[in-house]
Image (tube, rainbow, N blue to C red; front, side, top):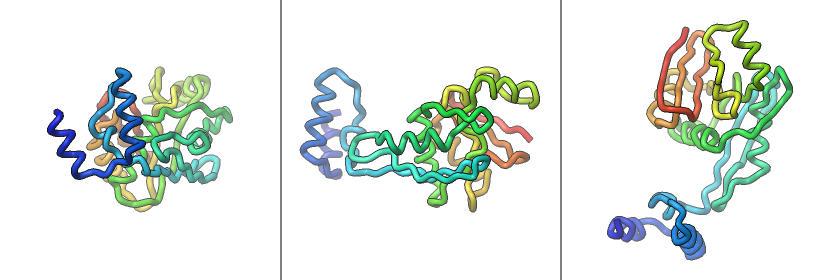
Length: 192
């Protein structure tokens, strides 16, 4: 492993401050991957999101210089609003990063249209009574799932990209024009 780290260190530029900070975390007993150790700390991560029911767009810069940005995370939370109950919750950063990765792999910076993000327990129960296929313990309730589509990107490509990233569950709903993505166990399904 030491040789792997040395060979990677030769090909990746790492600031001294970033290396020392990450090394201190490792010395403290935290588990950190080799990729995280040599990651570019100047990376800025942004998501473009549009809540189709609220008709509002959000440009959420949520990560920069090794840190999550609270303002950007709050923008994501607002974009995922349960529009029926007018409630927001904290969206899981793993889901936020998965959406960011999907966007990178799709190769278009058009952003995601959100059909359904966060759902309160009350909203989820109401949907279960009126629709088939709504899970009782939905990942939407915990801020770990979203139903999306992207202008200019086929649902099939969006689905295939999400499945390929192996970040969690992927549901394909071509009849309803969205792809479900969550950060639960890796699985996939199709409805309609």
